[in-house]
Length: 256
Image 1 (cartoon, rainbow, N blue to C red):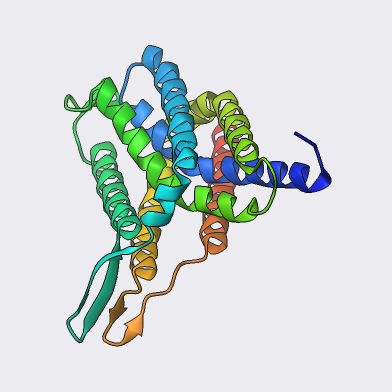
Image 2 (tube, helix red, strand yellow):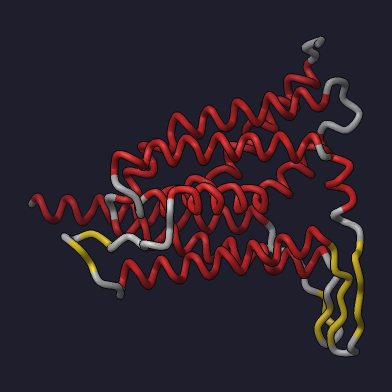
């Protein structure tokens, strides 16, 4: 492999993109990990990210399949509502509704449900295997856009597949390095937990609108546009910054 400037730039860009998009995964994994004893959390985080890496690599191996999922399976036109349903839009739609359901349920459990010894009572129905399965499925939903973007960015570059795989591996290793401390910090601050769940609700809504946009859905003659991810991540970063300032202010006020 010849390390040309074009190849190096593509590798660095893809690695940065995978790390940024992996923030969604870290938040989701952190929320799930809080359901288990402290001794099992690190193992769940590492296994979840490792399976996420394998699933993304498998998606890359199936690039031809990724092209097929963008083709229309069927369409309908009821006058006030029309759409061209693709497998990709169905996957994003299911992922969006699952995130909204999961986030709403977690908020309810943390705010309203019974507590045991000051901590939220763990759901008996959520086993270690089910948690890993949820992590993999959500990662597959999150990965669609990043994988398709990576394919578009490396189009025409030699050894593109190796570049994309290397970027994914490096990004997952970076996330493994920071995921455990980030998860611990989130789970020891209830306000950050609720904020993280709010982010997942927002991302779930974004996935639903993106599914409608990709399927060219129109409602009463109006098409549904996609929410720019830059706006979404800016809102998340801004909200997180405000909450960190509030936490620092509360800590100073408590110590004074």
